[in-house]
Length: 318
Image 1 (cartoon, rainbow, N blue to C red):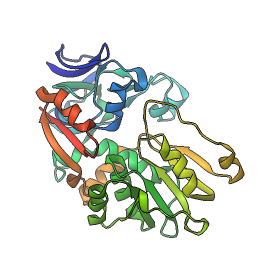
Image 2: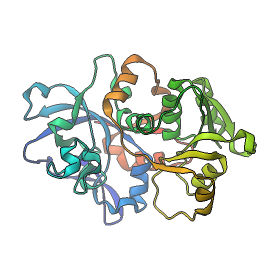
Image 3: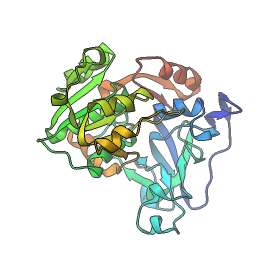
């Protein structure tokens, strides 16, 4: 089968055997999304080598759970060892021996087929299209914020970053009715968010005063400077939530965190059920975020397109 792989510091389309892991389901990928994590892996993040990709929707070709065969599915990307305390507590996302689809220890979804345990798969509701379902994983990551902190209509919230993840996070946070502002530097992307009813402000027009600071600041810019800006924007005893993944180190004056008693919260993967519910009910519209579709055979070109500044979601299809 064909697969888009990163090996020997080079991205290439390769012929590889069908994936086979004992006791797991085999899924034919129908659509997969390129995200910033994939781009950062090619730059050195996570030291991953193999088939990229973790955002996907597909059809089950084979499974130990025979009821899944022929069904459209999305898949939780983390697979735990099943033995540690975290796995026994139903938290494989933090298992120290976990694999992660297309990120750590497991080939990913930029291929004709992929392999995951049957318990990782969730059936896609009939009313959710492939183009919507492919957003389930990043949308779940956005939903994770609301599982970690309580945000309600009395709070002021800022999202830093108008790219793919920032757009999704803004749409999810907007569902709670808080005073929300998306901060970015791309006029077209800010206009896209504004059309979804989200208040926006350009980075060059940002006016930071003690009275204008936020209860929660969500950093989704994908840049090292985002955290510093987040600390400028958050009120004393507020919280900064970090969503960016990028290859590189950040210099940080931690005295500001101590003196202002700021909570800093890392936020990663979320529950797929929440994301599928938002898609099925139409509370979050993701399709305007799609920039282009490419065939898997054109995967190298698709990754180059995704890396272009200002590009939103690029999809691969079989």
